Length: 414
Image (tube, rainbow, N blue to C red; front, top):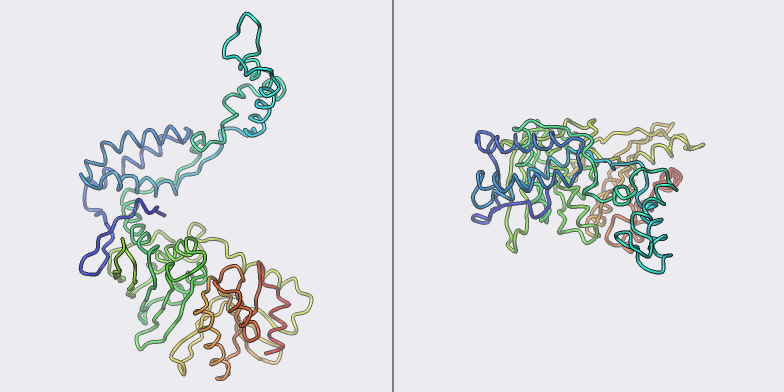
């Protein structure tokens, strides 16, 4: 992901247009190739050495690419390559322990250690280093004492991309950066779009959403970071990570209300925008964060001694509610021994407005014979008072982990 200083966009007639690079531009490919090569040739070397090399090269590569924005483009490309790099400490020894011991020995001296041996045979800095080396059996404590600095980390692995793939990743990352300033996204999914795939990423990222059924498919409303009162930075990152998941299917259109450099503007995209996802799909490791809340709930359910005859099934299933012109996307389906069917949705981030609307929808669904439960984390919402009020109805409240017992009690009292 790019930082704010790497994101470039302009506003034209009320529309925000993120910066793009063309894979057909040989200058762009040349710069991408050189940056990839620079990382690859610095395997096994400290981060500081690579950073110095990048600084030197960007002075030439930047103006060659774009006289005005070249430096920012080069730095943005390098930031994306950083995501593909693994860094390790240069030593297994603990720098903090070495540092602390050296400072203890220096503090016990009547005067600061001398830099060179003198006539009075004062203790020198080298004397202290030799003593620590003798105590720890380490050959070079001077090097180790600051080995935990970021610049000392060693590049241990680098997943080198093709230059074209790096450029395509840059174009998506620029749009992701604009989404940090979004208030709301509206995504229209065509009838042939893989809605289950899209909702896999909605659920995975814990986004605040509303869903409508349309004559052409589904309309998905997603709250943006600027509409969430708490956890804005974290939520913005999750929303940005949703975009590559959307790119895995077609057709769709996206419209986002954003605030860009103090101006209200609209970001518009569709599945024909020429964007390419770097995700492989729902089962890939690289694009996903562990969905610990749902995974922990499944484990808790499996360990439960008594589930009251209920069986738990995983997998996001779209539950159309044509009477209400909407749909729900529960995380779990529960079936009882006598054939009763219930649904459980674990909310990710939530706001006061979204929780109130969701509870009202669940109540309407229940009056029409659909048994739906909601679970919401106290730490991911904006108003504990609103959650406390909703708990009296259809919401199961939890702190860090959702207990199977709490869900069973809610099923019994429904």
